[in-house]
Image (cartoon, rainbow, N blue to C red):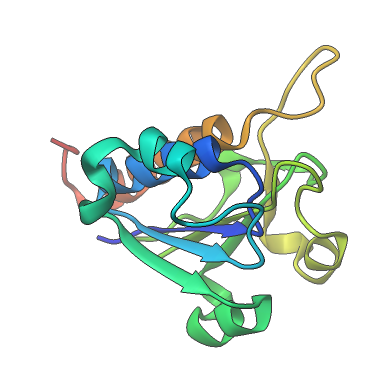
Length: 157
């Protein structure tokens, strides 16, 4: 089972580093879609990912179009604070690609408009409008793992 995480134009190096560590810990692939708000050689990025970078299946896509050419549309699930359905209703599958917008602009509106049936949110109460990107990825990724492991009969161990 391989899940994929895609980050659209991430801006904050430690978030991407923490997500890379999540990818390594879960044997998930990480796709970053340029332009990035930092260099992949950034010290903070490397520090957040610690010594796990050699274990990350990292894909760098120069543009959104390149990512779309590499990843089948039916595998993509989009996560945004502007979507309506909760993330636990997402139809996770073993090869799903979990797509997230960046820290400053979120998911591009054109994607949400084009794929409303594949767009989901993490419900929040109170004055908080959004979660940290790495936190959001962790919440959704582990729900995807829980659901796909229960589908294939494994216990997740």
